[in-house]
Image (cartoon, rainbow, N blue to C red; front, side, top):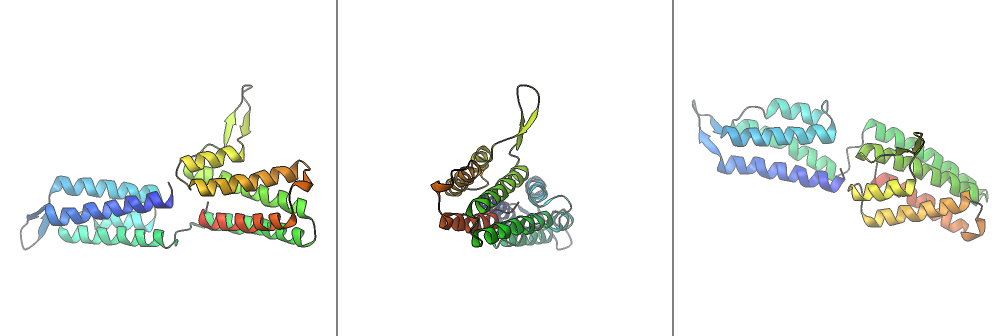
Length: 224
């Protein structure tokens, strides 16, 4: 699920909760105001499922929402909306990298640093291979994150890794990122293949430098 899709679904959850407060309120007792049971249960179930899917069942967002929004009073709904609004704000501001994403980022960045050092030492071809291999591993991590298969069984029943270019195409279809990102990735993968197959005259050191910087930016925009 892409960040844009997550934001849209959180926005819809907020809209539905606010609609319930406006249009599905019924008087309660002892000065309390209640939301119509059916409308509340629909919003509660959908919102909780969304938070669990996006952030995990043990996340602060999911657990806090489950506790605060379970009751059908207007106060419960307001507190639940507060949780969803906080989740949307953090997603929009890019604050939600998980521990595994941070570990991946640090690991992959160290490989990109190696590639950059090799490039400075005039080993552009080795730098291109390392940078491209780092991108391939990141794409596989993204595939796992977004439910895109990273391996397949061949006719002989043997499991093989799928091509990184294919994974990127399917990540685009899955909404992990857009066509512009995919085209950029495909260009980096093509340069990596040229280096890996000994076509060293097909690219320049400056292109490898742009590749390393571009891969780093891509990974920051698309954490795995």
